[in-house]
Length: 327
Image (cartoon, rainbow, N blue to C red; front, side, top):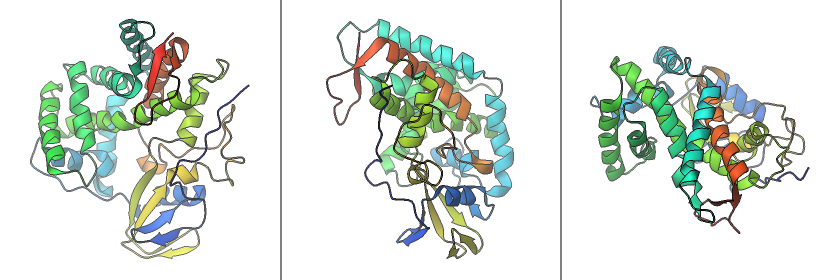
């Protein structure tokens, strides 16, 4: 079987002991990343809250950015929203919507995967399942929030995100504010990560042999070209990590992209495997592992499966766009 080889993206550091840089400690080995993710002394930097109904309020209320004493209860709100959703149903709905979109494209025309499918389909399907009144309209609003979700967004992006949060709240079913915030947080977390996984699977695997199952393709793309490459922690106490003494209050940059290629866990780390074993860390680990992993993979599989059956790659993927052509 002619399988894709996926080499490390530029900027992926090699695996080695934790190393200090200007921003703290860079952690690359699989075991060290797992240790940091599961150590209660390594915490997510908390986000300050803001006025109700704003981006700052949303970030300050979702479980992802919550301090340890608030995290478990808020995470439970997100998992409660996901628990009734059958991943198989999500996959079928994503496949159905992808097919409907492709049915509207003339044979030989070009489809923008990222803009037309990878963001729209998972978000529209998930928004509908979570009870938002207008799932199609929710897509652009969720993307506006996602664009400003992490620190460093400019004032214009934050202002757009504030308006988008207001619009999403108006679409949401009645519920306590904290419940609604964590429901919306699921959508925001899915926006770029699921789209990135779909895009990478199309880029690397559209021409892969049909015998390679889509679930296997996604599992290996998740490892070798992860949509989330890094995450951050801050230490609350002095500790030893990978043989290095880390002081309290120091920042940790956990490199999923490097850990997913650690030769101690993944021999021949760049080689695509048909029987994936070993845990890729892209969805995290420990008490803050992504609660929607199965749902995200199901949504991605629905989209990618249809694209593999019905589309071919353009002659060469442009550097700034990912395009396919219906057969």
